[in-house]
Image (cartoon, rainbow, N blue to C red; front, side, top):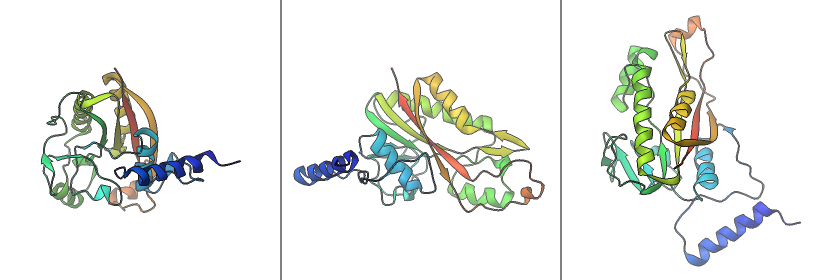
Amino acid sequence: MVNVMRLKSQILVFCMNLFDIEEIAKPFAWDELALSLTYNEKDIIRWIMLLHNGGKPFDVDPTYSTGRFWDGIPGPRHKFDIKPQAEGVIEADARHLPLPDASVKSVMFDPPFVIKDCVNREMTGIIEKRFFAYKSHTELWSFYEDALKEFKRILECGGIVAFKCQDTVGGGKQYMSHFEVMKQAERIGFYCKDLFVLGRANVLWSPNMANQQHARKNHCYFIVLKAMK
């Protein structure tokens, strides 16, 4: 019996070549399976595109930075950043995007998540030169909520947000950002459609670990949210 996944992949590639279709994510290999846990970020991005975005590139990246996130993967149509660092990126806040209502189908959101109190002074300086460090988790989560409301505005019904976030520990307290994001999203009108976990084999050492009280976070999340009516 012909493997169904392999047949679908062959048909998709044939159609792309026949009709000169724009570049999309590489189709699933005949023996490939999208996994909820992996150590390869590019695999997660591609799997989200294939499973939830029709194999097409994302429409919007509101925190584009230098664009290294998209190396080897078709990039977004609309590139925004509050401090543009690459050609073709428009200056805009993720909470106030210059796009009409219900005008896009997908958003990839990879915002900074660093809290000043959660890293040492030297590391904070390095991060602040490249990204933004928030004063508190309350401020960070407020930013997340406002951004989600803006994404709900610009997305068509059924459109998706791939939201990358990471849990943290500060002052001896756990801050489960992925749980907070999912709660916010459901209140705003999203359905939490999928969840991917990205593991990291190498973990940076911190002086705070000499008196460790919680498991060191060596993973982050990609939460797939679907905009509902």
